[in-house]
Every structure is written in C-alpha cells, then in structure tokens.
Amino acid sequence: MTNQPPHSRPHTTPADPEPRYEAVVVGGGAAGLAGASTLARARRSVLVVDAGHPRNAPASGVHTYLAREGTPPADLLAAGRAEVAGYGGEIRRGTVTSARRRPDGGFRLTLDDGSAVLADRLLVTTGLTDDLPDLPGLAELWGRDVLHCPYCHGWEVRDQAVGILATGPLAVHQALLWRQWSDRITLFLHTAPEPGDEAYEQLAARGIAVVDGEVTRLVADGGRLAAVELAGGRRIDCTALAVAPRFTANSAVLDGLGLAAEEQEMAGHVLGTRIPADPTGATAVPGVWVAGNVTNLAEQVIGAAAAGVRAAAAINADLVTADTRDAVEAARLAPPGLLPAS
Image (cartoon, rainbow, N blue to C red):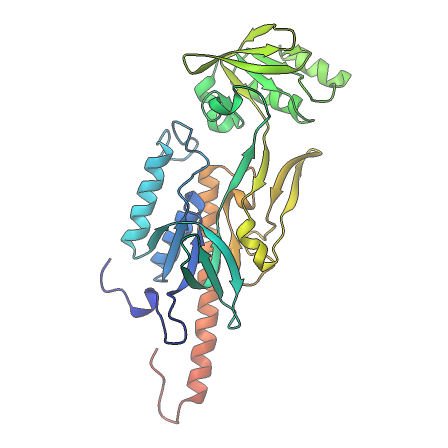
C-alpha cells in the first residue's frame, strides 16, 4: 500500500517515546490476522504481536474453511500475515507479558524482550491450550490420529476404526456424533460415568461397541495410531481416537486489566475456561475486545476469522466515535471563522 495517511502509522511524542498504535492485536492466528487486516483496511495503525506457536500446528491441513480446504496451517497464517502487511499493518514476533491501563484510557503493553508499545484499543486473540488426557502415547499423536472435532477431521478418518475415549458425560454424544463418519465406532468407557439404559439403547441401535475398563496407553506403529491398550494388556485395533480435552483460555495477558476467565459448559460438562464477551467481542473492560478460542472454546478456524472481523469492525466504530468527539471539541475551541485541520 502507498500514500497512507499519517494517522495510519504509529506515532510517538516526547512525553510518550514508545510507539503508539490505534490498535494492537495480541495473537496472530486466524482471528488476530483477520482482525488486523480489517483494521488496516480501515486505515488504522495496527500492530500484531504473535508468539508463533499456533494451536493447530500439528494438523496437516485446515478444514471446513471455504475455498481453503486442506491448506496447511502454516501456509494459511503466512498468507494472512502477508495480507496484513500489504495494507500497512505491522507483524512482530514476541509475547505480551503484561497489559496495563494508562491514565489517558489507552494501554501499555510490555513484551518479553523488555520493550513496550502503547495502544488505544486492544484485540486479544491468544487462543486456548488443550489439556489432554494423561495417557502414554497420546500427546505424540495429537492433531494427527488423536482428534477432538469431527467437523474438522471426520472426513479424513471416514470408515476407519475410530475410538472414543470417554472422560466425561459428553462421551455418548461424542460417539453418536462420530458415527456419522464411520460405522466402526468403539466407545472406551475409561474414566467416564457409566451410561444409563437409554444411552446404552442408543449406542446399540447405532452399532457402537462399548468397552469397559480404563485405557492405559496408545500403541503406535510407524508413528501412526494402531491400537488402544486396556488395563490387563488387551488391545483393540484403532486408527483414530477422539478425545475431549479441557480447554483453557490463554488469558494471562488480561489479568492486569481485571478480566477473569469463566467456565464454559455444554450439556452439564465443563469444556474449560474462556473470557466472557458480547457478540462483537467487547469485554467488560472498555477498549478491550477478544475473538476466537480465547472467548469461544468451540470455535473453528473459519469462525475465529469471522469473529476477528466482527471485533475489528466494532473497534473501528469505537475509534470513529472517539475521533468524532475529539473533532467536535477541537471545532468548538477554534477561533471564529477557523476550522481545525482534520
């Protein structure tokens, strides 16, 4: 982009030598980059600070993303970063270690290299951490053969022997859902509560096998899942295993602003923690928005990108309101017959 107006670039003053942006995006995944692109296209000065550790890095491709089906996650993010930069946005590798409110209503962000930047508005898109079941062999296969979302990965394991590792009350629902992609579903009861009579009837009607006993480890062959091993040594062939991790919002950066995470439930099961926000992503702290998995634990990549766009539009509208208020105040103070420069 060329001929960008001065207000679309960060600025400094003698009183504030640290660069000040109209918006700083913390997190450079789909939500953060979509939000940053939207803000940059609105001719706002925007900085994206990203640690470079995307949650979906182990996956071979992004799925259910219209016109981007199967794109490797790294390629999608690289294209997003290029788009943000093409509109004048800045991308910076690093981690925001703290965020503090300034007396003027803006924010001061400290990075892990000791530097700091100022922001008029914040968009936090730091995602979540998957707290996986503690089973030998499971973490190594996460994102490839150990999965959690059938809409993200069901097609890729269609008609295969798919196991469901039951760790909570949603296990029966998981098994019935995954049955849409394969008729070779096995529900391993593991540590979950015993299903009721109605649940057993549903599972039997759908041809879903139920196996008692705790799973002790996953057996791999050539780096791919081959079987599930139970206490006592019994092995059951399995080429994909669905699990239900506990999702924990990566929200530490918001602690200094007084934003606390809350639990998110589904059908009586606690999915994990998230930062509450309204439909635009606005939080209880004025000037702070969130988007993606940090606020919606079930969001897929395409939904996270859409949420980033919605939040960015709300941020720009908020900045327009502030710009208009400042312009009106300046006009009222101008000498008669003179209008301040816009």
